[in-house]
Amino acid sequence: MKIALFDTSVCTENLGDFIIMDAVRDHINTMFPDAMVLHTSTHDKISKPSYRISKGSDFSFVGGTNLLSSNMNKYNQWKINLFDGFFLDDIVLMGVGWWQYQKSPNQYTRTLLKSVLHKDMLHSVRDSYAEKMLKAAGISNVINTSCPTMWWLDEEHCAGIPAEKGENVVATITDYNKDPKNDLALFEILKRSYQKVYVWPQGSNDLSYIEELGLNRLSKVLPPNLKVYNNLLASEQSLDFVGTRLHAGVRALQHKKRTIIIGIDNRAFEKAKDFNIKVCPRGQMDELKGILNGDFKTDIKLPNVNIARWKNQFV
Image (tube, rainbow, N blue to C red; front, side):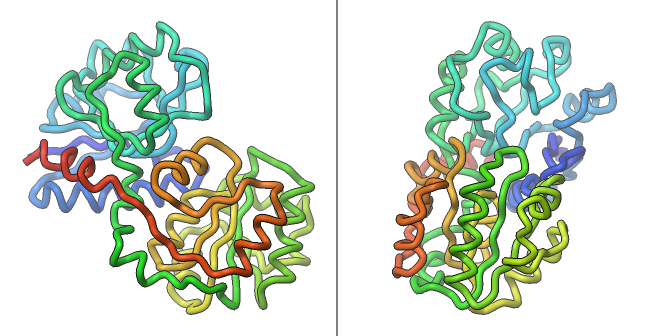
């Protein structure tokens, strides 16, 4: 068996895509233990070898992140166009999201998605908003499974996440969605609340923004390297996560760290609504202080029926 995987970590400037693809690959390897998995890119134009790989595979998946938008003729993180629809027509979505809150999909987007996506297999999206928007594009064979990064965060796993505040904290900010006043205020609160504050640059320009805000005086700046971040989560026993980078927060949850996402866009707010992830809107500092200094139980509500339904269609 061959599996084609349109890999969102290729040609990316966001290490969060690697966190997503770690999960996508693990789940695919579990679902298809004897398969050869062949990778191609979503963030670059599709080539003839990619067409050939997809056509020669038993299943073609595109994994995670916010690839879909309402105007894919103008904004398309997934670098496909109508021409690709002549060669691709059976791609299955796996935990894919919708880019920001938008109006209904335009005609170009509806035509494109109907062309390249599988007509019969169920598509997996990361939240109910993405499900709603995909259905508005005329794709009815879609269910909300949450992001594959979350599929391990079941009741037993969450029971091992501390309810009380840790001694130290690792934080993130977002280079493409700046709010200097509130981002700086966040770190000032963290500095007063924890013994040690780390900051991890997940995006390609996060480090420049960290330097712009002077956060090196409030925190220890980590290298923009996923292995370094993973090692910190594995080695620091009493560590919380607080920050705007959603998948850095999910990685912390995977390591059983108490996690507070600072909400700056639809991804965090939809996950809070659908799955009960702890989210505090950026700028609501009094609310954040209350969350930081109080105890809370991590009680993520996974759509387990939908996850099983999506996986079982490949059995």
